[in-house]
Image 1 (cartoon, rainbow, N blue to C red):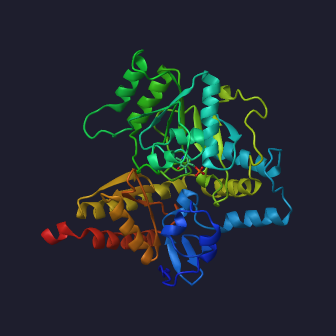
Image 2 (spheres, protein in one colour; image 1 turned 90 degrees about the vertical axis):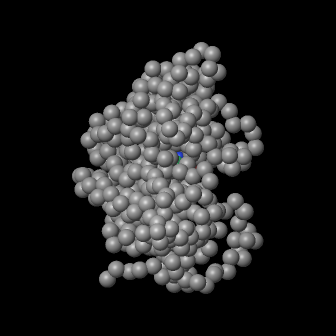
Image 3 (cartoon, rainbow, N blue to C red; image 1 turned 60 degrees about the vertical axis):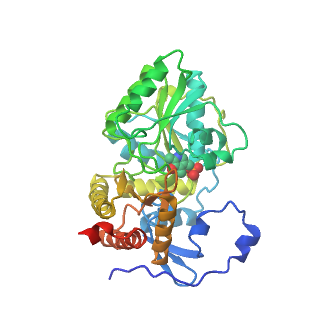
Length: 433
Ligand SMILES: *Cc1c(COP(=O)(O)O)cnc(C)c1O
């Protein structure tokens, strides 16, 4: 029997949060329940409510909540008093992870990357990437893109486009130029040519960059998906101008867009790649910066930290790689399911004269305004579907369902979304028909 969502209507007592937790909290405001348990695609609240999770910890739970195989591996490791702390010593958990990553991810894709364990959040991996690019090239500037999102620490924040986030810095955010992303101008502006021309012109005011940093699909910036041709051309611009190409695959990677890395099969290889979010597969913090071996010019401890390799995350990450990435089945599954998602979203969008965005299982609908998107996601939550927004004006309703979701549950969630869009935007085309 397939379960269906069953939201609770009783609001929890939130006094302790209001008294003690910083005002900076966000998701708890749009999801005003107290959650206590989760499995697969379900998350449960204190009052017996059951919600279908189309947020997946912002894509940190691509394999769903508490996947039983990953959970068992972690329980066994803890029961055997495995090493828990995260100083960068050699541990059996780290070796098992690196072996799985080499054997199942790097070698089959013909990739030769060194693996750097940064601090455990995505922004740490981005900081390490741009620091390394600056050290290798001796240059200061980084080219990032409009609507890019790369994290909240100062270096990564400087690479992030969003004004609201940038405003929190409190100091000038410097040494980054934000160039137009693929499709930024409606119409025929070739944004690769614009960048190439600016970098070729000694009087353009754009200094030679250490790196060009991009997401192949902009997760927080509105699910804009760059074309393979654009990405390949940008990689050529990087090479031509002596800049390293950094692909921030923190959200788009780990299968979200269909393949393990979001850039596979596109005819270029980034110099540096960042991974975080779903690399542990279990919602445990873990971040990696990958780079060509020749770029590994760090001296020991030059970029340091207490938590650089979360052993519990290594255990679940290795189990996830062995379970999902040992053959092509999972990728075929994501491709098929991504096709279902695309067809459903296209249909909803067409009915209301809207457009869709994204790639693979990372897709959304542009509903025109942040107010409409917020009303729609709120209505979804009231029906037991957790779903969030993205984009410069939070105008994109963004589906980040677990990659392992059954087709029926994916459909059930999309039914809720469809109803919410219809309720908010009306069904003008249907009425006309
Ligand atoms: C989430 C995200 C980050 C930052 O990761 P944190 O773990 O939140 O620091 C960086 N880049 C991209 C593309 C992301 O989606």
